[in-house]
Image (cartoon, rainbow, N blue to C red; front, side):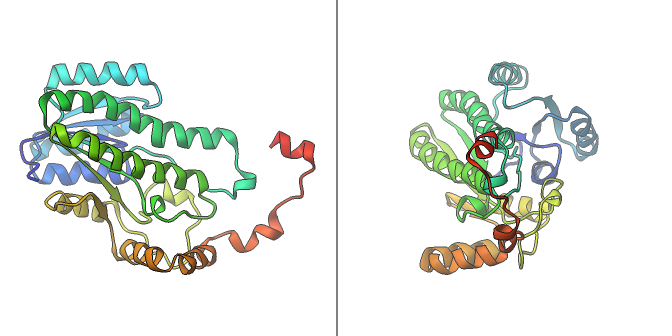
Length: 274
């Protein structure tokens, strides 16, 4: 797929993988970038960096968990700047904690942004793509959407959900000439992951590496783009020896070996409060 001269909207564009994709797309002469994130200042800084590269930049400081605002913003952007030909759903948040110590507010945030936010903006744009009978949608999942990770249960659940959502859309929207793909990075060195305890033996990739793999993957007839040899190895192992992959994940988890010692013993009343 040649992205030159096209209009792309990228969520989560103010940092990490989303930011790197915006810069990589600009290098490949995309015509217009519509950058979506909650941080207005970071979006402005990225726009300043992109404009000398010859790409038109539109920034939308937008909270994807607010459906009405999302639908209004997309309608206005489509009317003012023309059709969005490529949608890249990259916005997301991760909280790392053993399940029994997890907090409902953190869980709700992950589900609201990682999945429901993705659903909301995809629905708004896909309906318009269907009318034109043209478009490409790339949903950024994760290797954790294939292999669940201890201490990351809800994050893994949202990434599994994204893969299922992507697969269903791929079948439904094919009749409208809309291509739907999933991007599955392994652990990536971003602001978000720097707050996490790393899994043993996992070598983080850079956002720039992920962005380059995405652009290369757009030229291939594939439904999923795995990023890095670690991802390919892990998926292969999980497919043919899931019991082994489960043992490896337990050993690799940064806190699993401490769980039995660190878990408090809850009374029934205390468990209800948690």
